[in-house]
Length: 466
Ligand code: GLY
Ligand code: MN
Ligand code: MN
Image (cartoon, rainbow, N blue to C red; front, side, top):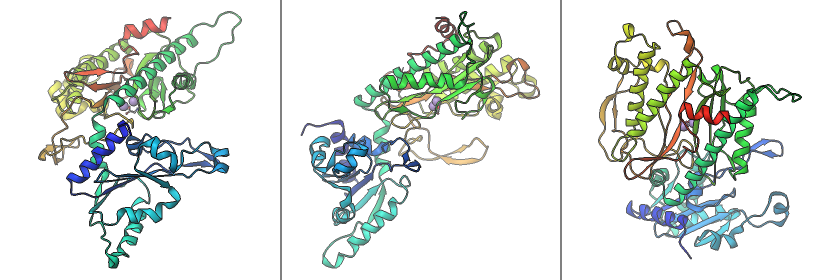
């Protein structure tokens, strides 16, 4: 058996179990979800399961024990079902295809799991991720306990498998980085396509050509087209295409609002490729030319992103990019009068009071990987908690933020969102801007894997003139 990334990862899980006193890890893939009647939602495997198997069919289970033995359960071959739903790998072929030691039909799960659990020191499974999993495992443990009289030993403890897998997933390996780079490149191309479509639709139509009112969904269609034509299986999350004031709604979805000349459009969209996400936001003038007020705020957000990128490197803390970005945003808000200096004081006062949160109310990033908001501890494992003030001013015990290391992937996404309000200069009302790129932490700094789409205002204007 040649070693694959999956066999290597499974061996690491076995090693972690062994180091923690032994046991067996159980992991189901994701269930299928009915949409209505005979239609299902498109199937998406469980990320942990995929990480350890590369197997995308529904109905799968994986068991790994601390000796390194791996057992897979999958749907049995079934000619009748395969005519309707497509080919199934089946247990027999799974052994070679997935490099597992043994494989059974998922129909044998209830019969085999008690045998696998028997005489194991502990059982590991992902806590609070699969509805009903705990009950299912309880049932199998009950069957083991019923055999105690005959010499069977029941696992004495249960542990959260996520703890082990999250740490592994946080540092991306070469295989993952290659896919993430490609996902980022596809998404970047999709953003360019959407920007150019917006500008083209807002140009005066050629004589004899019908005028189509440009709407958010037209740009969403361009994104989806570009994702899919490059092999992406899904969007990594529901695309946000927000025209004008809609950009100030953080979780807006692409709707049917008109893209108006003179307004900005904010697109937050990324494809999922082979199980890996990308996450890009660009904000651009619908007609291709920023107004002076838009440009002023845009350049502040961009400077905030530049400051955050500078401190995205090994040895820095996860919160350092956020702190760097927030400082630039707060200073910018004071400089342009979004925050009144007389009322709010200087930048240190604004940072201390949190007054900037009126216009910047989210964090500057999150881990990214198989899941767009990927798993991984945001605090440094093994460190001592210390007393800190939380955003609401309460003192809480918190571990220090995670130290960045090469191989971590995080987004850098500062923004400014201006809702109409008393005391806020009218020229900025309803402007919402976010700029988001995906950063791979490297040995010396970070690599922005989504910069296939430019970010400087003049570069955006140039590509929209084409
Ligand atoms: N697209 C989700 C996010 O930016 O966090
Ligand atoms: Mn994001
Ligand atoms: Mn995003």
